[in-house]
Amino acid sequence: AGVAVRAALIAGLVLSCPGVLRLPRGGGGVPAALCAVALCLLLLSDTVRSRGRAALAALRGHSVAVHARPARAAALWGGSLGYVLGHCAALTAVAHAVGLSLGPARLALLYLAASGAAALLPTPGGLGSLDAVLAYALTTAGAPAATAASAVLGYRLLTVWLPLLPGLLVLALLVRRRTL
Image 1: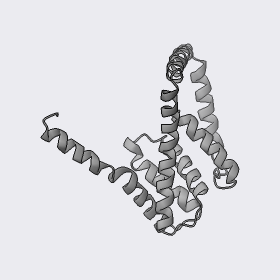
Image 2: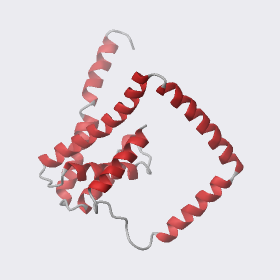
Image 3: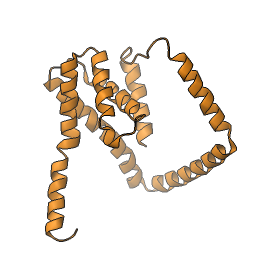
């Protein structure tokens, strides 16, 4: 659901904000072709095809089970959309607080593209990879480097570090009650 929501948002935002995302020119053709050939060879193997069919069958079964109950389906899709929109809103608020003049739609598109690219470098919570890619995306969109870095740090403060405080309080309460 998260991938589908992000893909739909990126598609809509690319259409509404043309020219924000630009692919690098030149030099990327050979690595992309090698990756495409490797992917084709991988997909042609019998093991990958059989495991792929099994995974799709399991996915279909889980999807039917979730969507059989409208409340669960609404929670799944609403939660996926709410999570992304919440992060986009946090980035927009911080960006405007530090003086970035990019609009909310452009910031949302940059965030979605950066988080998608950062997912290629698996780090816990995207720490480090998302920060670097998002700062790069903001600077290529025209933000000064210091302002982009400030926006990313503020965004991370709101979405990663500040939510730790209630968690620590709950942990302390559970330890005090000897639940843990």
